[in-house]
Every structure is written in C-alpha cells, then in structure tokens.
Image 1: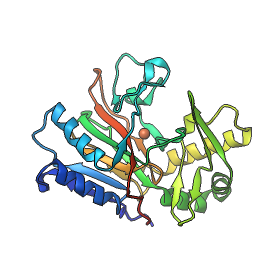
Image 2 (image 1 turned 30 degrees about the horizontal axis):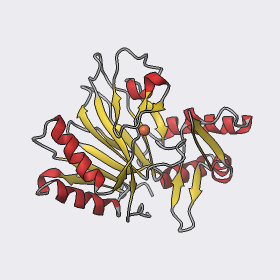
Image 3 (image 1 turned 180 degrees about the vertical axis):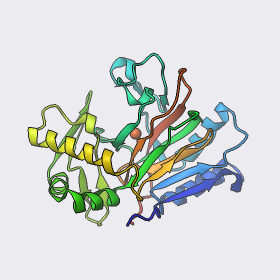
Image 4 (image 1 turned 45 degrees about the vertical axis):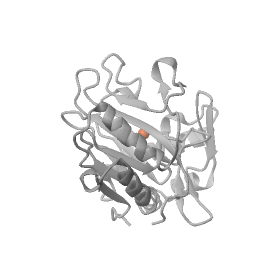
Length: 270
Ligand SMILES: [Fe+2]
C-alpha cells in the first residue's frame, strides 16, 4: 500500500518543445496522481511562465485562484497565486507567506467549484528546507483505520462543513466514489465556526494524528523543487504539506501556483 507508485517525473530535456511536454503531462495525469517536472533549463521568469501556462492550458481550464492575503483572502480574479516568504507578514498570520512548516491539507477543502488538479512551479527555493510533502489518500485512510478506527469512521461517515470568506464545501472528509476511487477533502483551519463540538474535536484529533504520523511514514513523498521545477497533483487524491525553511528576506523562497479543471482526463485509481 505504501509504494510510491502514484507519482512520476517528466524531464524537460527529453521533450522537444513546450507542446510536447504538455502532451506528456496530459498523458501522465491519466496514470499518476502527481507529476514532477525536472530538467527545466535555460528559461528566465517570463519563459517559465510561458512554459507552465502552455502545459497547464493543455489540461483544461486554468482557474483564477489568486487570493489577496492583505484583503482578508478575497479572490482577485488573477490566475496565479504567489507562495512567497514575506518578511513583513508575521509568521503565524499566513502559511503562504511564512517559513513555518505547513500542516497537511487539500487545497480546495472550502472551495465550492474546485479545480481538479493543482499546479505549482518554483522560482526560488530556500537555502535550507522547504520541501513539499505528499501522501496518497488511500495510505492516509489505511493508516488511520488501523490506528484510530473510530476517528476514521467519523471522517468517512459524517458531513463536515469547510468555509472561507464566501466559499463553502460540505462533504465527509473521506468519500468513496461510486467507481471505487477514494477522495479526501480537508483543511483544519477552515472548518466552519458553526460546526459541532464533536466535529471540532474530530478535526483536532485528525490534525494531531497526521502531524505525528505522516511526515516520516514510508508513504510520504518529499519533493524539494529547485528553480524551474514544478508539480501537478490531483488535489482530492493526495494530501500535501510543507517543511519549514530558512529565509530572512522577502522572496527568499518563491513559488507560483494555480488550479485546473481538467477535460477528458480523470484521476487514476490505484
Ligand atoms: Fe496547499
């Protein structure tokens, strides 16, 4: 179960141009939960943006996912959202701008019309730390069922309400689809304030368990993107978090991220 058979790497040097790389990414997403782009060479900032836009647009509709932290997380109508260390924002105020480790979550837990796939690429990596970590949702539930079966039953059987600003999503944390595939929807920090005490307790217990158990588990894939590298992942099929990193100046670490509603492709079963 813990085999990391759900991810692959695509090497930019092995593809003739952006269209060929986009085609390879489209094909890879039918077979893998996560695609890691490596060997992306000889491109400046504008060139990287062009390449990743070409690759992501081949997959479907690229959404306008940017939220403005300084305006309370409101959507700005822009496609790309910056994940950058910002010296002027207190570390505890927003993971997106901090150097702290970021706990496990799915990106669209509170989004009513969510993207299927998230894409992210790296302009600058921290001098130390900053890896993004991924675990396939079957491994999360499998471990939880063997260690905390009562909690697993609550997360599978009861509807949880996640929200942020004007966005809402209500479903169990783990959902088994009619075709047998398992999905997950979870962000500790966006559990709606109106939720029951029992659900708040389950939210806390699950958060604590994941923090304790997942990072060093054999099921965890750690990807420390270097400048130019990128990732695509099926957001409901792998959860992710981030290691802490060393940074002193604003933009010492800088990633761009967006979301895609894919066409003609569905997430692979395992
Ligand atoms: Fe995230």
